[in-house]
Length: 81
Image 1 (tube, rainbow, N blue to C red):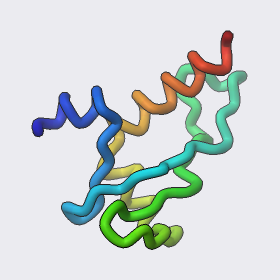
Image 2: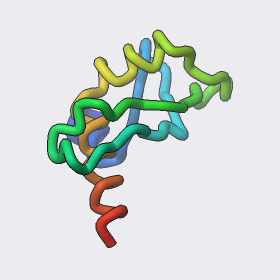
Image 3: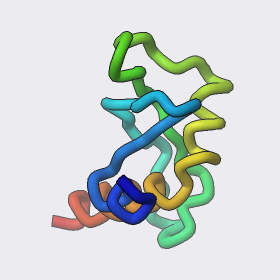
């Protein structure tokens, strides 16, 4: 699966391990579309279901920036209905 397919399917990976159940917090619509204060709040590794720690959350967002912003856009669109 290439990067654009990962974005389309909201596939997240950290150290080549798939991450699931990621949630985004601190979405401030006053700052839209940048939403610079938004961040991944919770996520778990798919194979172990162990939660990511704070440093892993930061790395997840940095390594999956395109997917993060696609998920953020979807979250914002869901809120606007």
